[in-house]
Length: 133
Image 1 (cartoon, helix red, strand yellow):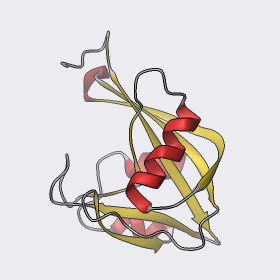
Image 2: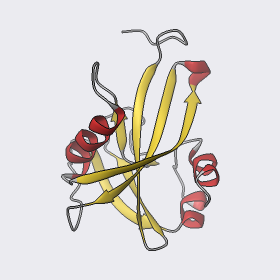
Image 3: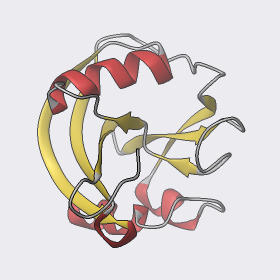
Image 4: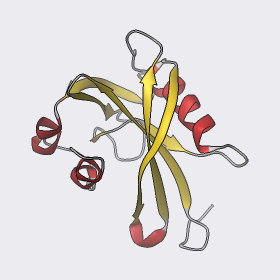
């Protein structure tokens, strides 16, 4: 399906914090934006709520159970063809384990480390600023 500003792709993204660090993933080589660094998340399926999509995406990418928190910020990208909803989430699973089909690796980084990291998806610094980092 072609995504347009009238029919954008909707995505949900998890912001998982541990002390002063935030979980970021390096995307696998087999997905969109291969090997880029970002927060975990993905497309909201038709009929799925943002909260349900967040729980499903964290299972799929991190083999982790989470409790959705609150909507932190929204980002519109690609001339309105993509809208991302950034949610806080608390880990129920003690340690996430990347699904290698979707995630090459994970790291817990301080916001300034994320801002300086090579290969971070555009817009990540703006999200960090929007959520108070």
